[in-house]
Length: 166
Length: 82
Image 1 (cartoon, rainbow over the protein chains, first blue to last red):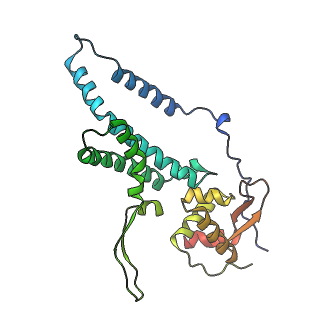
Image 2: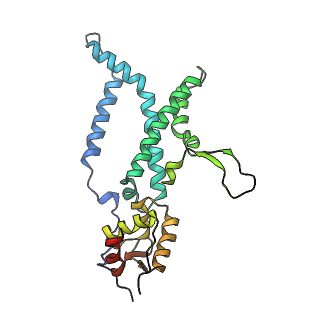
Image 3: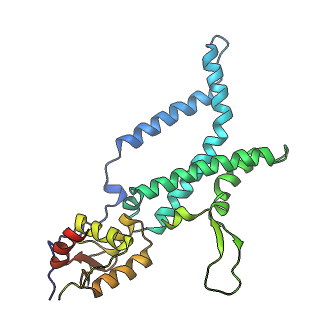
């Protein structure tokens, strides 16, 4: 009979309520709060020009940031739902981080394309939410370029969602 | 049980490296750490169990109701093969 090698007890997945908060997450939340306050508060006339220019640039890039964040959240949710028992272990892998990064970049790119092509009357908030969440339909689509008629070969396809297969 | 001659694909190697590193674990943890879909993971683990490389056993304390571990013979064999 085969012997088990150094069988260990299986660690029980920890409940989120018994874990200590991660310092990096708290720092990120604090920085985000400062950032949002800086964006929201109107700068007075005596404020330095660089501050006003920075605020203007950040406000212009805000929609892209929101769309990118939505894209990242969608990627994160996809991985967590695929591996529901051990989501943290799955998210720690290199491919998972790459997938989330691709989602973030693809969402920002899709939003830029949408802004160029969309009519001026389109509601901005709707466009942000629509692209941020809906771009996944494009990224997971497989395009068939040529179909095999008989024979043993396969179809020629272009699959944008190859990363999900990793 | 003797370990049969090993001809492993990349996914199986990844799973065995994970088991060698992490010890006994549930199949869904193997799935998460290798980022192989759960259904595919279980199918591969069953194949490896048939080959005598791993042992799959029932465990009520496991999140999947099962645990998987390398066999001692496989661990020695894999040290050179992997």
